[in-house]
Length: 318
Image (tube, rainbow, N blue to C red; front, side):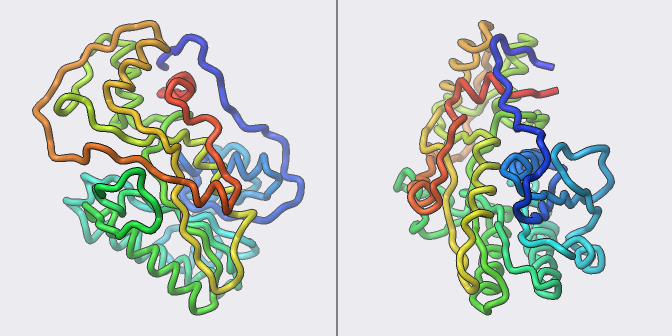
């Protein structure tokens, strides 16, 4: 475990639900899924964790159901008796999607179609769908707003965009009411993914092993604390539109931080030097920042923990 001096835990309360809705969370065993389950429980809902295979525990889950997005029989059982579905399950690695585009479409699009069909059979209308701000590609206009044209740069983003269109079509047909949340880079909390930047930076601070970065390290990204992302799902569950509607919202911090900014902040938080090795540059957007004004004004959501130093102090990597 990487020790970060002065780290403050941002744990959710673990009291039982106080009524609320029965909310199925697909992908509940994942990085974001666990946070969403805990946040729903804290808000008084009755979260039901759907996982692909048996897991030991999902903190805050009132119930755990095992189902596969590509198995309609298990999906029908999973959605039985629920009021709302938060759909987080899917494949999410952009680089991997280039090597397996069919697999990404199969799970992210086909799995969403199967879930919507199971929900329709069970009479479940409410849906909050997890998507990605990567659907915008590399627009010149920053920060990115919802009215930008989509320009997905890889099969992962393309598959999410197609899945969004299926969600919207199902709503227009009168079979559901939905909110689509487009998310940026998530960080903080219990982050066990060694490929993400912040765990890599903290590992370099802890071990002294050089951090390899592409180019000069000036690429700017929007980092959103996973707890703030989870709160957005709770807010969406509490503010679903009328039947027949599907609304789309960007969810982000609205702040930009370069790789070098993250390194400097990690050195300040840990009190340790982060050695850096510059690799050859790769083609990538210079700046990607999210404008979440619509979510702030229409849903009343706002980030609380997404300052860079807070994210770094709260990140647990082992």
